Length: 138
Image 1: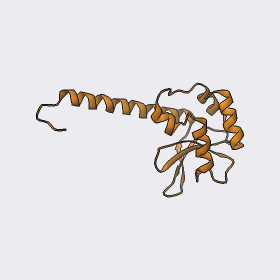
Image 2: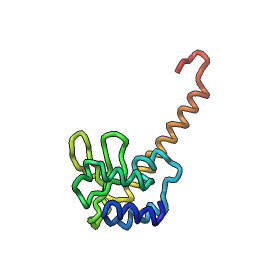
Image 3: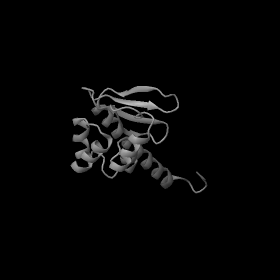
Image 4: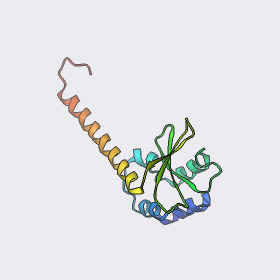
């Protein structure tokens, strides 16, 4: 995202974005990774605004800022008035709010590990396909 998009997100949601979040988004660490950009660390201002307007974790709160989801039953958020950079998880099924990562850096490292795991899985599938015997169906 660029500066004007971050300003629009903050303005439309009537919040002040944390500095660490703004810094990260201005120099997005996972470009071209749609799986991360559309989920764990949303890089689309319209999707981000929609997530925050329509999500039960953020409902009625001016301090919860949803930054992404697991595209299922968990949403990830930060608290805008908090001095630390803790990342929380909201479980839709249980309605519980839990600490996911103690710091923003830990959360970014989690995203990086997910990318590495996905790439390793892709390499393994390619290798298996290339090395399978003629009689193997899988």
